[in-house]
Picture: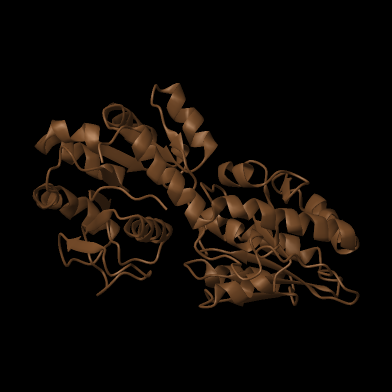
Length: 372
C-alpha cells in the first residue's frame, strides 16, 4: 500500500451514474486511491440516476455539475455551458492532478484557463481510429499540451507516437474476476459427454458484428455437444433473432445481460469475439480469469494485446468460419490441450487485476513528478 501526504485527485466524467466501462474503471480507481490515503473528488457533468451504478467508497466525494440526464445531444449542448462550473469546483487547479475521461472537455478548459492544461491527464477508453480525422486533428493540438495521455491498447500508443504525442499504455482493470479460485486450476475441464458452452457478450449493435457468431454457430448444427449463448441487448436484437431462425439455430440462445455475470463465465468454455473494432474487451479478460478460452479476430487492436495466439487463446482470420470450427473441434477432442490453454488464460488475466493496474496508474503520476 502507498501512503502519501493528503492530496486531492479529481476524476472528471460525463456521467458517473451510468453503467459503462469508463464509469466502472473510474470508480475502481477512486476506491483504490482512498485505500492509499489519497482524497478523491469525482466531478460528473450529468446525473442520469440518483447514485453511481458501481460501488464507491463512502469517502469519495461527488460533485454533480447538473441534474440533467445524459444523452449524446445533451453532451453537445450543455458541456460547453458547464465548463465554468467545472473550473470553479476544482480548488487549486494548477496544483491538483485532474484526470479527464472525455477529450471533448479539454478545449473548453483551455479557453477558460490555458494554464490548467499541464495538470491534465487524459484517460482514453477508445481505439485511436474510433474518432474521425477532424476530431483527431483537434486532439493532436490539445493533447500535446497536457500533462499525460493514457491509452488502453498498444495500437493507440503507436499511433499517438506517429503524431508526436507521448502516451502511457495502461489497460483497464477487470473488476469481475474469479477471486476465489484464481490459483485453483480446473484439472478435468473436458470430461466425456460434456456439452461445451460457447458465449458471446456485448450490446447487440452493428459494431459488435454478432451476425458472424450466428454463422459460426450454424456450422455446429449437427454437433450435439456444442451450444452457443449470446448475452446482451440492443437495437439489432430482433434482427439477429430472425436471422438465427433462418439458419435453424436450435443450438443458440439469446439472453439478456446477466445480473450474475460471474455465473455465466463459470459455466462457459469458450468466448468468441467477432466485433468490427475493440479497444480493450473487458468481457474477454473477465472470462479468461474463469478459465474461459478466448477466440477473436486477429485484426482487433484490443484482443491482440491480450491473446498470445495458441498459448492463452486464439486469434483467427476474419470470417474464416471453417478455421474457427476446426479449432474448436480440435480443442474439445483434446482434453490436455484444452486444460493447458484454459489455465494459461487464467494466468494472463492476473496482470489485469485491479490492484496491479491501479498501481500502474498511480505510479504514472509519481513518474510525472506530481508533487504529493
